Length: 295
Image (cartoon, rainbow, N blue to C red; front, side, top):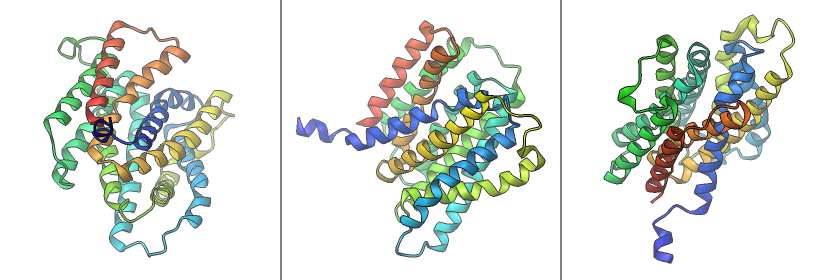
């Protein structure tokens, strides 16, 4: 039993990965609610601003004794601007121009990018098991969001939004790749807080006068924004970076495929979306991919 246990990730890693992706999987449902009362740029600004306030108390308590190196500062700034601000903005606008279904499908490009980039730049091995896991995850998520076989699907008319969502998924991979290097020397809470605070600055400029809604946002939009700030920007980001500290980036990537599965479940529960046989088969493939990656 002990030998078998050593082939799998420790319980702490499972909790971090499952918890972080469970929170992130609710992003599309809550974003839809937030956009009923805020513009895309204002929604991203308030989500980041409130999240930065939540991280602020921990920055002083957990600040490392050794000064952060200039190279790490550069990686933190780049991760905040191009791995957090940019994908959040692209994803929010893309979701408004496209659909949550297409957003879930294109999210599968993020772990694909992480697998490829981590092999190219982090020296992580691309094994046959990982290739099989990425296939199960990507194919399973395709079945869920397309509700059919990929080669039978018709082209979407939301090509502008889909293009933004494509770029959004690629940019998300930068956050994990840059974070993997920095987290060897910087605590996860510090990296999470600094990247979030840095991301607030450009969003304040982009949002401009639209930061303040013309009319009072509906309660659902305010509740969704509060959950995004507390549960996703603060909670999911912190869990993700803590997991990234102890697990290879390519292993983290496979767990991203849980997010479309969770998004479908939330849609069934709260938006009364139908639970189809395609969703059930796709969800099973995603879980198989996760088990393969956990070895």
